[in-house]
Image (cartoon, rainbow, N blue to C red):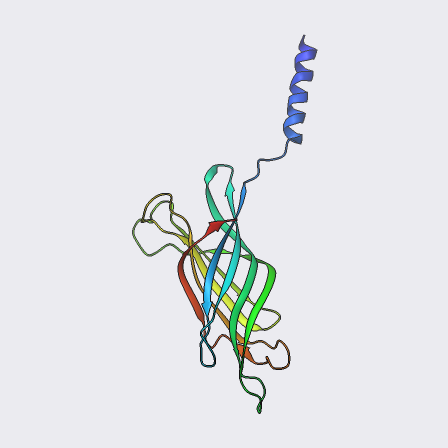
Amino acid sequence: MKRALVIGLISLCALGLLAPAAQGATRIRQVQAPITSGATTGPMRVGTLTLRFVFKNRPATKRKFTPRRLIRIEFSKVPLECTNTPGESTSQLLLTSTLDVSVKLTKAAPPHTNKPKPGRYAFRFSYGFTGFAGTLQGTIDKPNTGPKPRAPRSQGQLTITDLDSNPGHTNCSTRGPKSWGGLPLTGV
């Protein structure tokens, strides 16, 4: 009887050692920001910048998903002004491209108040493009006002300072930063 009990305990311990640790769940969310042209030449155009993020939780907090990584940047007909080389006229390029990235988000310090609000958070990200000169910066936060459930929102800015696509589309830029703010993140 003792022997069976000892063998049973040893086998239970072995199963406990072999069982994987509980992992947090993952959700993919995205934000779509409209990007407009400067309209110095030609008609006003509107393109879309789509950013995809990985949200994760911890096993102890099953409902609290927080942003962890920016994983994809998609440009869809984002208008850029091209000054080209001297002697050539200016032109407009509609940038359409997809970049798979892995940018870690960092937790922002809570606002300077005596008591931070429960459930509120803010995470920041910054990315410097490698194929051309430009940056993408932003914040994902969860407000503490409004109807529940409170969806996370995004704000940020895109700046492209020098992109050379092909002859006739060189020295392309966004003509300053293109900003968005308060846009909700949606599930994918």
